Length: 146
Image (cartoon, rainbow, N blue to C red; front, side, top):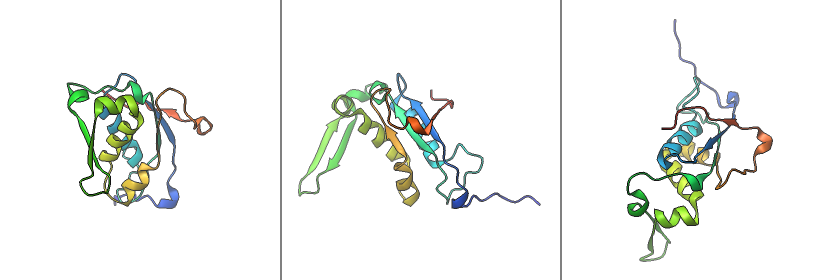
């Protein structure tokens, strides 16, 4: 009889992956990062268990926005005050804080539940090639990012 394998939270083995975003589309890199954060690349993936890995994205400032998105795409947020809706264009955001742009993209691809919120804490984004988690010996992500 064939039975499905269900991963238990105690049996989760977390690895560290590094993704280089240089000259790659921001959305494609974000999709790959979300895929790893959720653990969907593993054969032991279980939807109701947080089984994802840690992801480090480097060169976020060199990620590209295809088409005319750099000029047209806008990030809206609310300050919490009455009439406090604000907006920032991605042309400004990619100059001021490209790591935030990457984090927003990855966060939008994660589920809006406890697993998604917990997975988002395992994402680290850096502007250049230097990162703080060298002691964890991250593995270069070899999956396809078009």
